[in-house]
Structure formats: structure tokens, C-alpha cells
Amino acid sequence: MLHAVKEGLLLHKNSKSDVKFMWNIHLAVAKKYTDNLREEAMKGWAEKLAQGWLPAPPRRAI
Image (cartoon, rainbow, N blue to C red; front, side, top):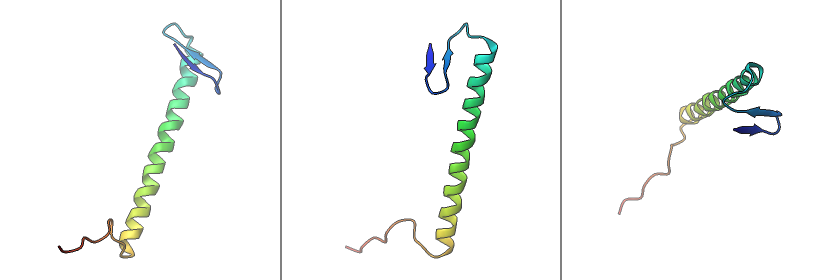
């Protein structure tokens, strides 16, 4: 049994189709958010590299 307090959902194996549908919508929105966050981070890294930034500090010769 899963309680989604903010959404007011109580999900379990015998949940009604409306509850399952709302849960799937919340999952899709969360997936969209994380996918978009990754895309934006990758764009930021690509821009930094294009400007000549190194992905890590240079190592010192010993």
C-alpha cells in the first residue's frame, strides 16, 4: 500500500482505475522533470567545454 499524501492518493493492488491513472500521471510528470533536468545539465556541460573549461582540474606532475 502506498500513501501519496500531497496528492491524496492511496494506491494498493485493488485500487480503482482512477487512482491508478492519477498515479501514472504523477509518474509521467516526474519522469519528464528528471529527463529535462538531465538535458539541461548536458547542455550546460557542453557549453562549458565549448568555452574551454576543463571537466576536472589539471593534475600536477609529480
